[in-house]
Length: 265
Image (tube, rainbow, N blue to C red; front, side, top):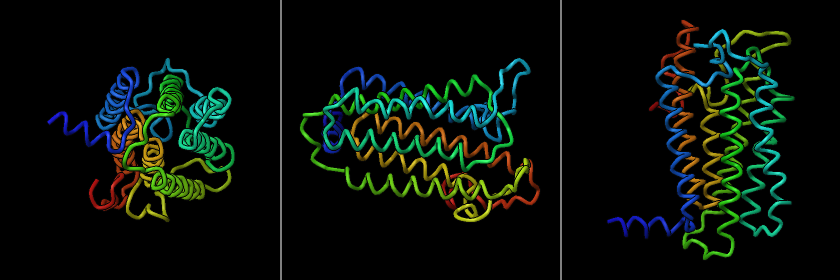
């Protein structure tokens, strides 16, 4: 039974070292735990949930500063990896490029698209920033380790590129729609409209998951898939908490709008 599972995994995954296997398990468990805590009402404190259950002694920063803190270290590692690992093969270069572009896009959105009204608790910002940085570094490093190895029999690289492009485009479009909800100097929240917001409260999360599925398909390493599944579970919990927040704030919020998966959840 175990041998059969290993055979099926090896059909589309590169072999994994003990260190990368341990990192994969650890990352999956931590992200899954944070997703479960979100559903229980114990939140990482940013965006609209930034001041839910916030302690008075917590250090708070502006959303713009906090979001830049989240994404910049991961972007800088992605960019510097081209110098750290100059012998990239095509697949490894694609993985590093995809992650670097993803975090550059997020930084540019923070600077030019998003209109924030809340803040971020610094403790939460440190946790998320470390998660993004560690996952980016480990994804690229694990890809570097398998260079020269026999390619998996099933090549998911090109479907991964397509999924990545669909995900990053859809994520940007829905972030743009969110930014248009507020006029100049407006700070309040509104029920989102347009795009897939008529079906989901967090379609931008759904497309972000597609981004990481795309990276996993390009990478085809155990760590990339582990991080993607863990991220999906975290965003599932976060979207559940976000929908619950909207239901508590807006009596007119349509009950048929789901959190993350159309018609299901």
